[in-house]
View 1: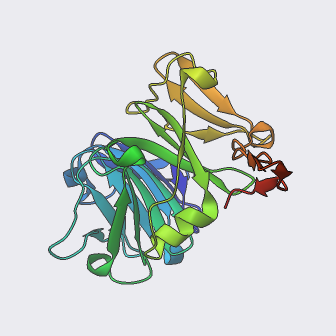
View 2: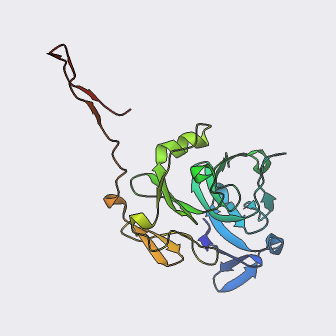
View 3: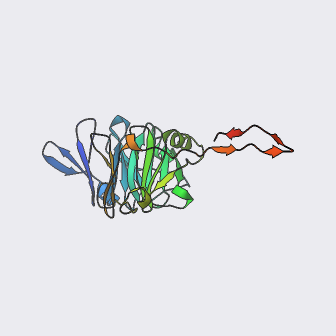
Length: 239
């Protein structure tokens, strides 16, 4: 469910989109062809980004027209789990290509660029992405949670390298490292800022203020002796 700027509430389901105005629930004409709608995100001008199970990513404009989003001759994903807007970029969690930065959304839907990353280079399915209160980006997958720095994701969306990600699983306290969300919400945030991810064994909560990236180890070269002479120790700091 999402609420548009005019107050209209939009719901996704197995048969496309429905709107609720007052107490009247109405199907959006033509949206049944989308099949199962899994994700919604509000765009500028009353438009709406729509992630579907088998029909990929779409936009409904202010005139309630449905437009497919993709790059001409390029990547079109079929199975979308979650959509998150960040300025002019959509972060689209997919079951085929990992997490994709799609934009600019202010242009024509057919002219956007897709840039996708797979955690560890091999994980194709990402269930959701969310930013915490400290600007870090969290991803959910079948092999655990992943976290990276927000500035690295922003650089990737602009054409830079894929961000470095830290993987968290049972060793970090998860009862099951397999996150999910196909038939329920993929991520939620409570009033305290805690992020909640559903898994195969309950839900996992992330408290951003308590999480720290591991510190890089310091390397120290001890003094060496040569012909009875001792040199000075050298401390090497990580990059």
